[in-house]
Amino acid sequence: MRSLMKDGSIIRYATMFALVDLLALSLSGLFVIQNPVAFQKSVVVQPVDFDTLETSYDRNNFDVRAILEAVPYQSTAMVYEVEPEAKYIKTIEQGYGNCSNMTFGLAYYLSRQQQQYMIVHLMPIDGFLQGEGHTVVNTSYMLDGKRYSGIVDVLGGGLPRNNGAFVELADLRAGNMQNVSLLTLNPRKGEGSPFYGEFLDTSVVGVIFSEDVESYFDFIGSIYIPLGSRKLEKYIYDGIAILFGKYPAVYVDTQDYGILFKDKWAVKYPSETFLMSARIMIALGFSIAFMVGVKRMKAR
Image (cartoon, rainbow, N blue to C red; front, side, top):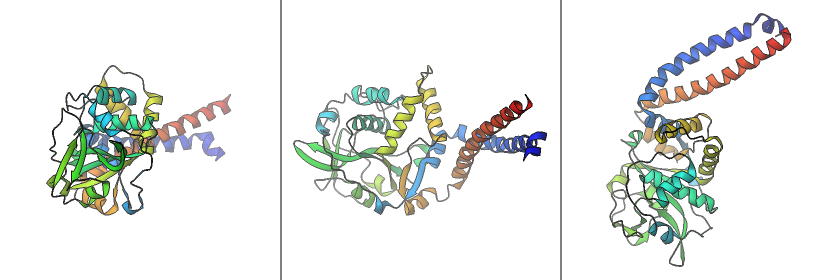
């Protein structure tokens, strides 16, 4: 080992490996640059045994009517605020954003209230890699003095019902809901929704745990520095979160995972290659810098 350090062989081998990794990073990076949403979905969706998940919560200090009724819905265009509190203000307080934006905005509020929840993704099998789908929240809540547990549709401004009963996560997974309506809690919203009928029957349900969302919020808050462009910040900071394993995983049932990615390996392989190569490159960079530093110290 000492002779290797002396003649610099370890550094040379590490440099050669880094060049090979850089080639893999560059080739897969072309795909990622052209398909950032597909990359994100490919690396954050993970399989899990759904039967082991806890999907109902005891804490119920969340007054769903008071929150949704006050949202001044303005536009469903995507907002790019990545800093958690800024996203909450832009979505829940100011009324801008799509279903995912709105849901993460509510998640920030629920986290501040120490309320457990799940972010729930309804991912159409043929379109989720292009960003299609719908996002809601599964949590316990108070409605007119009574406690319930189930789905809150933030963008819809209400609570989905099937045959008069509030929809729960298990209902979404079972699908085949025939008589769906939305109990609207905001005067700016209607009672209809396109996401709980045929759309649901051709989609896979994925969930994000509140603990993972809070860890992501804390990570973004710890590194966030304004860059002058909200869109640029979104891509950079979410990319860093994915790179360091801080972006929350979307868990789907193991069987559904196979269905989602069947015939989609041309997307999944380059995405996973890019992520692995980027992480290796960072590790190699630190290793080479450390070894060069040790060699210089010994040379003094």
